[in-house]
Length: 223
Image 1 (tube, rainbow, N blue to C red):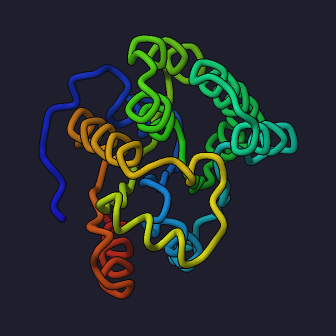
Image 2 (cartoon, one colour; image 1 turned 30 degrees about the vertical axis):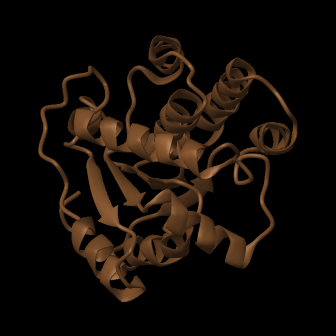
């Protein structure tokens, strides 16, 4: 699936303006609804970066630090309001940024992260219905100066994603939600990608694993 070419109209959503002048590391994120298949490609993508001589840190959100992993358990298993979800996710993100992501980028390393703030926009915003302005304020507070250099959005219809999830694992609190929820999440992701077309690459997750791998490894050369 080709990426829509739209102007990055929202400040901060596109490329990090300090990327070339202040750091040589790169921040890469993988996004998509649960079951879209993004996690399948993470290890091979990281290995391809290492083969090119980069020092790479593979991490995830919520998570990536002991504190953030504890918060992840709460978010995935405990019932809570959408506002509490978002606040906890951003608390974990702040610790993750302070402890892992920013220090690695400052050293010139590459960081590959399974989910970042685009997930909050999609899940708590699109899925739960949290007002966009509230999420924007949290994003501006926690990382106004930093966005991923590249975001791969694995796009898949919600019904097909549900079939894939059911075939491989028991559902957590989010995965147990209905198809309509995941369609809202999907459309929020696609809207976010249109806003920040400069950093997003849409991946048609209905394609075969070798086809997707080829697309990802070719794109490494453009970052």
